[in-house]
Amino acid sequence: MSAAVPLSVVMPVKDAEAFAAEAVRSVFAQTFGDFELIVVDDGSTDRTMEIVRSIVDSRLRVAAGPRRGVAAAINGGLREARGDLVARMDADDVSEPERFRVQMDFLRARPEVQVVGSDFVEIDSEGKVLGRFAAVDHAELAAASLLVENPLLHSSVMARAGTLRDLGGYRETASEDYELWCRLTRAGGFLANIPSPLIRWRWHERAVTKANAGGVRRSALETYEAFSGWFNARGNVEIPAVCANELSGEGGRTGPLARRMAWIYARLGGYFFERNEREIACKMFELSRQNGKIASGFSLDLPLKSSYPRRRLEVALKKKACSCPVMRGALKALRLWPYRPLER
Image 1 (cartoon, rainbow, N blue to C red):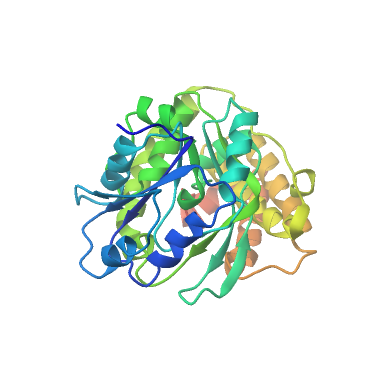
Image 2: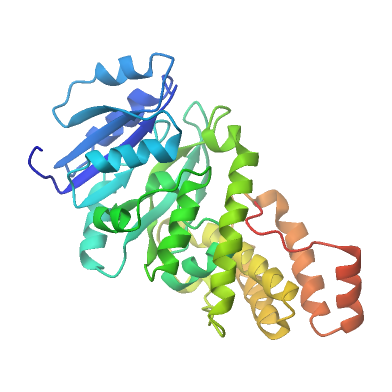
C-alpha cells in the first residue's frame, strides 16, 4: 500500500455527469492539499467516469464499487482509504475552499468528537442559492435530536477513519448515515457541527434522497425504533435547554438556527407528550416558543418556512393539553398531530 496521507476523501458516484466535474474540482481547490480523493464508481451508465478520469491530479484515485448502492460504495472507499481522517463528498455537491482545513483543525482540537459536519448552503441544479441551513453546534442537543432528525448533512462530514472501521462501517440501508450516527451515539461517541457553511448542497430531481424518499423514510424509521428504545432505557436523560442566540451567531446564522431549534424542540415536545411525560414536554414546547420568538425577528430563507405557522399551533395546543386532561384525551382520540419521528 502507498504511503499514508492525513486525509482521505471518499466520493461515491453514479450517473452524475452534470455535476461531477464541479464537485471534484471543488475538492482539488481546497486550501489544505495533503489528501487523496477516492472516487468510487457505483455503476454509472452515463459519462460520469469519463469526466472524472479526464481530470488530471496525482491525488485522484478511482475505484470500482460493488454496485450495491451508496453505503456499499462508501465502504469500498473506506477500505481503500489511507488517511486517519475521512471526509465524505457527494458528486453533486460543492465543498468550500476552507472546508478540509477547518474540519481537520476542529477534530485535532476536539479529540472527544468522532464525526463533524457543518452548516450548508442549499443550491438548485443551476447553482442558484435557495437558502442557508444552520446545523446545531451543540453536541448534547445534536445527540438528542436524533429522536427527530438527522443532525448531520452527510456530504459535509469528516470522521475518524478508525472509529468508522471499529463500528463496522456503514450498514447497507437507504438511510445509511442516520443509522451510523445512531449507532455511534449508542456506543458513546460524539457528533458535532461547525457553525459555518462549508459546503453547497444541491437539491435536484435526480438526487438519491429525493428519488428514493419512501425507502429512506422506511429505513430511518427502523433505525429510529432501535435508537428511541435505547434512549428511553437510559432513564432520566437531561435534554439541554439552549437558545440559538447562546450559540454561534456569526454570519447571520442566528435566525436560521433559531428556526431549526424551534422545530427540534417542538418535535421533542411531541415525543415526550406522546409518552405522557408532561413536565419535560412542556419544557420542550417552551424552548420551542423561545427559539421561535428569536427566529421571528429575522428574514428567513425558504427551507422549512412553509410549515412553521402550523407547527406553532401544534406546539400551543399540546402545551395547553399537558395541563388539561380533557384536551389531552381529545387530541389523542382525534389523532391531531400525532408524533411523527423524522418528519420534515
